[in-house]
Length: 63
Ligand code: SF4
Image (tube, rainbow, N blue to C red; front, top):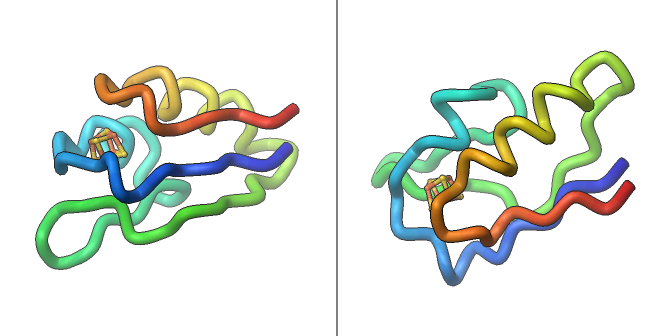
């Protein structure tokens, strides 16, 4: 699984990080700090939940 994040569209809700802080780190201003994540197998369910939590729909899951 690969997670892609369109960082340019991030408005800093921090919902992704609230759901899965280890997968979606934020920068000092509260915006997503990564544009690609490869979660381990045991993190995949959490990664999907974090992606769905983003109101801007900028996190896409590539299964
Ligand atoms: S929930 Fe979406 S908009 Fe909010 S910080 Fe995370 S990636 Fe950015």
